[in-house]
Each structure stands twice: as C-alpha cells, then as structure tokens.
Length: 314
Image 1 (tube, rainbow, N blue to C red):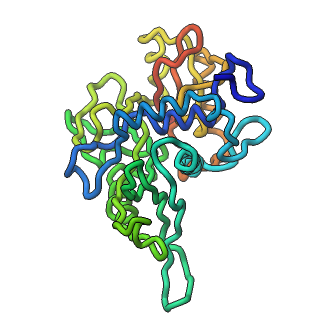
Image 2 (image 1 turned 45 degrees about the vertical axis):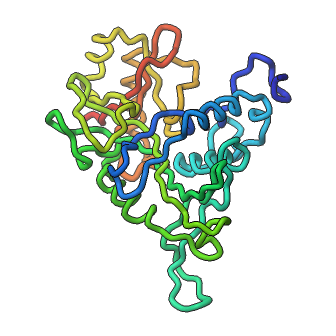
Image 3 (image 1 turned 90 degrees about the vertical axis):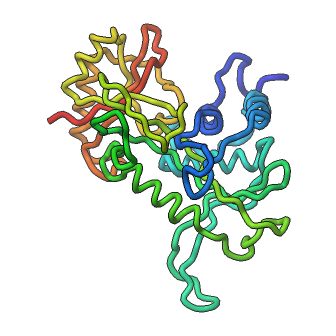
C-alpha cells in the first residue's frame, strides 16, 4: 500500500492518529471483571483489536481528515476530554468494528411536553457492533494520584492532579448518573428494537508515590497504566537515583500517547521549568492552581522511560 497522500513513506502517523491508537489500544483503567460495577467496563475482543491494528496501519486511515482542526502550531482548539470524544467519534464513523448511531446526545430537563429547558447531561455515544448489538458508551479518560498509606487503596485515595476530583466522585458520576441515562426519543431503542447495553470505555493512568510499593485496588484493571508522583523537592534525588538523562514537561494535550517534542531538559532545567509554570496564571483545564504537573522521564536519545506528576513546591 502506498503512503497517505502528501506524506513521505517514512513519515510518522499524524498526531491525531497516534492519540487515537492510544485511546483504542491502551489498557482499560477500570476493572473489567463482571460484577465489579453496576455496568460493564468495555473491552475490545482479540479479533476486534486485530482489526483495529490493521485499520490504524492502513495509509488510507492516515489520509482521513483531522477529527478536529489544529492551530497553526499544532496545538488543539478543544479541551483534552472533548478531543478524546471527537477521536472516538471519528473511529466510530470510519473504523472497522463498530458503527456510530448518535454522539453527544443531550438529555433535557423537560417541564412540559414540547418544552426544551436546561441540559441534564449528555450521552457520549450510541453505537452498534459488527453483530448488530446496540451499545451506549460513556468515555472516561482520567489521571489520578494515589495517596493511600497502606498496601490497599480505596477509591477516595485516588485524587486528581488539581485536587478537584477523586476516583470515588468520578465512579459515582460515571456509574450512578451517566451510564444510567436512558436515551430520549427517537433513540429510546436501538435500530433493531433492542434496549441499549450501557458500558464504560475507560482509559488513563494511575500515579503512585515514588519509593513505595503501589497498593492494590480491586476497582482498577490489573494491567492499568502506572506512573509515579513525588513532591518538587524530591525531583533532584529521583533523577540522580535513576540516572535520568532529562525530562520533558507535558502539556495536557500531550497526556495521551508517547511524548513528541525533541527538546530534553536536564534535571535542573526541568525544575526551573516547573517553577516557571506554577508562577503563571491558571491555564485552561486546571480547576485549582497551582496543580501537580506531568513530566516525562527520558533516556539518552529522548525516548520516554516513564512519566509522573510533580507536586507544587512550597
């Protein structure tokens, strides 16, 4: 097969396709064991994953239009969560295994027939699989720092980088509200007349205190992605202990897949960059500021070895 139009044969996939690969093929964040939650956590079958791999590698896929336009410098115009939703919608429109029925379907608070008042929420995706089974997906892409002191952790021990959300509050929202929504007309039933099967599509990372064994938590998928966190004053010791060649400060737009920029910051420069970032005004997407910031630890040639969060300095 020939390269996508306008790309050299050895060109890397477009950034949106790299992010979509991560969303589709990285491990689920939450446990997929039946009965763990009030609705299942969705997992692609081995056959579906193989189909997705082939589709992602097809030059015709890279030639598809961007799911959402990027700015001239390559950054996105939408928040990370909305970007992820647009990528999954793009997959459901063009991918090989599932087909979109509706996306971002608003749920209205209706006071009387024919009235249309405030929005009570929205349904992320209604779709069907290759066998015609109807699904209602809610997408959750999350990053939490584990603050448990013992060898086991509860949902409340996982706290977001800005301290505004916990895994406990997210689970309550996801399974108690979002997945409990019933689609309004004309989507109350699937095209084949069956009810929709609700499922959570979960991705993300959990970050554990460096230097301590990660506690276990039955709510999390055994193979979930793991990183580290540490206070700012411990960064120098971390770099020396691990022989880190350098770091890269990751914007929220780079939290999905592997890091992409070529610049590598030595540990002292990375520390200075963190301080400078915290001294700026609150960036978009941060509900509390200053918040923990994500670093990618790099090897000598700039390949990511690990990633983690650094807590604000005192």
